[in-house]
Image (cartoon, rainbow, N blue to C red; front, top):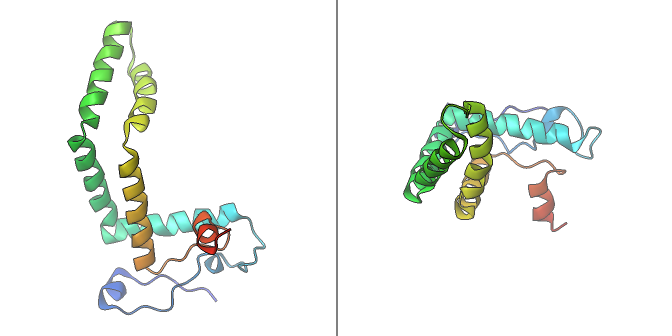
Length: 146
């Protein structure tokens, strides 16, 4: 039995059917005729859609940008860009080279606390929306103590 997640209006009014298992929504039994990758991909698409539809994605993005600005992340990357340009020469460096040099540095400089907080906020949002991890997902395995 396939069930669609509640619409934004239904969720706001509290009209909600029992939380669907995302694995069951793929048309396969939870025991898994398909791979975990398919279930995870479906979970990801549904979660992304709900985040966008409810405006939660924009709120999370704003939160991340504000937090990164507060901790000096942006200024640190700016300094790294300037160093890269100075070391290679402004006439010799390309945008692609700067990007390939800066991207790993930018990811490494994101505070672990922000990553953890963001993940927890997304998990809480998914739970509030009635999304349950499929039996093969990492979250479900962790909850089961496996």
